[in-house]
Structures are given as structure tokens and as C-alpha cells.
Image (cartoon, rainbow, N blue to C red; front, side, top):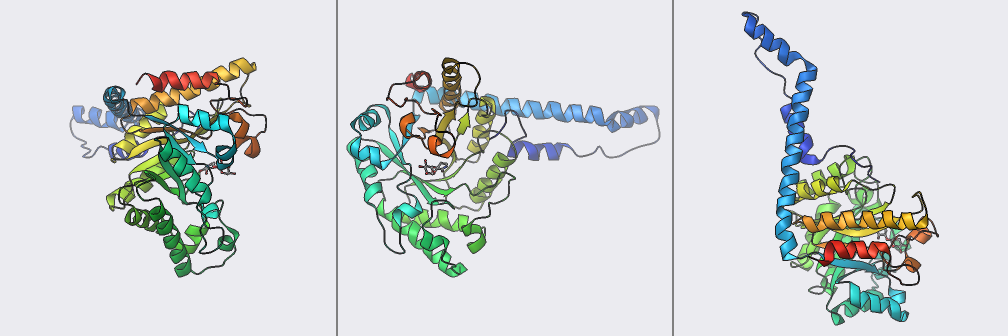
Amino acid sequence: MQKPGAGQGGCLLRTYRRRKEKPQGVHSSGRVVVVKVSFFRSRHVLLAVVLAALTLIVLVIYAQACHNSSAMQSSGSVQLGTAVAVEPLRDDELYTQILRSEFEVLTAEDAMKFGSLQPSRGRYDFSSADAIVSFAEANNMQVRGHTLVWHMQLPSWLEDGNFTRDELIAILKEHITTVVEHYRGRVSAWDVVNEAVDDDGSLKDTIWLRGIGPEYIDMAFRWAHEADPQAKLFYNDYGGEGLGRKPQAIYTLVQDLRERNIPIHGVGLQMHVSVEDHPAPWSVALNMALLATLGLEVDITEMDVQLQDGSGTMEERLAAQARVYNDMAVVCRRSSACKRFIIWGVTDRYSWIRNAVNEQDMPLLFDKFYQPKPAYQSVEEALGSQ
Ligand code: XIL
């Protein structure tokens, strides 16, 4: 996870480099000139000037983000969403009641992943994903599709297939086209590419990068756009929420896509964080403002806040968790680029964190008895009065 205050964002780094040029034209004649030259030669003074300039730029961008926010608040357009698991959707009445009453957007937690949709080659199973989309439509909710290209939860026929580059391209094209066409006009936004960037900023070594090369990203966005020109297409990742090496690399990636007219409309910030380890809200605001300068939307797509690493009593940890949720919801509401605030699950009872990290954790808005937690009130406060 991104530590608070670490590193710099994309635009800022480039500005920094531009401003770091050495002063030119050193003259030896004349006292005043010599004083000037030694003044500018002082690395400390130069550094101070650069830092001051940098601070000014940060403040201007941040002020711009805050300025945009007032329009956002009055337009009130942040939608609250959640990831949905298909089993409780089918047989847990309380779960579906909460979905209906609290959320405006649904993401398929697992049902739209490659392995779920195409368990054997060429045989598609849309039953679970269709159940989620139909439920959303029946209840006037939007659907975010998750996810078309990822290196996890792939079917074994694909992982073990030893396919040639041309075969992999054909498989990916057919999968994206079939799935996006199946949901054309019903899924309003897709996480087209998920988690392609590594923590060091390089492209992650995956079946897609190894088998096709970096152009798999361009291809995926193009094919998704052809299959549904109205759907908003997102790049989605974790650890890219604040500022630092990975957010910088994501910025550079999506900037390059935009410059080459690849159809991308947004970046998803997953926001799997904990009470002890989360980005500073100001750094998320700044990152959103930077991405917005590229004309992109920036949704929070998978938020949960673990509390096992927190200190103090459970009551104090629940309060700390509520503050993290509130901070990020406020950042989203204040950014004109942030349209959706999605939580990765409804109740602690079914959170993936319990399997993946710690079975004692309670990272969501509702506890395992479906009671709203302080985090629920804090998100409501942040988004409810829009
Ligand atoms: C998780 C699901 O919640 C689990 O049910 C599944 O076992 C593993 O994947 N980033 C993503 C999501 O983009 O798809 C992941 O979802 C969580 C991390």
C-alpha cells in the first residue's frame, strides 16, 4: 500500500525536471555578475527555489481540485456502489434487502472474471453474471463490469494452454468481444484491464505481457470499445491511489493511451487499505486532479478498510475505520472526476479479506449481523448530503 506522503505524481515530476535546468552564461568580469553566479551556483538555494515552485504547483492543482468540488457537491452525482457475490444474491434475503436500499451501482465480485465466464474454451456461462445484471436492472441500478483482462482467476485451459502469440490474441479478442457484446447497453462501465502495473512501475509479468507483449492493453481497450461504444472503459489497479512510483507509472500509462487515442475513459482506484496503512486523503485528491487533467474519470472501485492492524479497543478501531471511509468519500465527492464510490462487499460476513488476509477482520460498512457500523454513518455523512 501507498504510505502517506511518499513520492510525487506524474505532472509534478516532469515539471520538476523542466525547472531543474542549470543557469547558463557564466561571466567572469564584473563584481555583480560574479555574485549572481555564485548565488545561482549554490545548490541549496536552487533546491529551495525548486521546492518552492513545486509547492506552488501542488497548491494550485489542489486548489483547482477543490474549486471543481463545489460544482460537484451541488450536482450531487457520486453514486454509492458495492461488489456483489452471486450466492447470497440468490439465497440471502437480508443481503438483497440491503443491496436494494443502500446501493446504486453493482460490480460483479467474481461472476464476470474470465474463469467464471468461459470455464472451458469457447463455452460461455453467463448464468451468474446475468443474475447480477438482471437484479440491478430490476432495481434501477447501474452495473460496472469487472474485469476483462486480468492475470488472476483464469481458467486452467488458458493458463496451461501454451498458446502462441496469435492464438492468445485471438482468444482475448473473442472473449472481450463476446462478453462486452453480451452486455451491450446493460453494463455502463468496464474494468477493461486490471492490475497490469507492478509496484516498481514496470508492466507486470503476466500471461498477457509474456504472450502478446505490452500492446495487449491497446488491443483490449479497442476491442471493448468496438463491442460497446457507449460503455465507459477503465484501467483499474491497487496501490495507485495516492502519489508515488506506482501511481506515477499508471499516470504515464493512461496518458500514453490518451495521447494515442486509445479509447479509455477512466481510472479505477481500488482502495484496499487498512486503518494503519492508507494513502493521505490530500494525495488521493491530488492524484484524482492530475488524472482529471487527462480528461479521465476516477472512480473508487473496491474500497475496504481492514482494522486488525489498528491499535486500541475495537470501538476505537471502528472509529478509525469510519474516518478512513469518510476521508476517501469526501475526496471523491469533492473531485469532479470521481463519479462512483464502490465498496468491495456489503457485509463483513462475506468479505474476501477474511479468506485472503485475516478471518477475524471486519473491513466493510455492515457487520456480520448486517448491522450498520460507524463506517456506514461516515460514508452516509460524506455522500448523503450531496
Ligand atoms: C477478489 C474477490 O473478492 C474474491 O472473492 C476472489 O476470491 C479473489 O478476488 N482486486 C480485484 C478483485 O480486482 O477482483 C479481487 O476480488 C480483489 C483484489
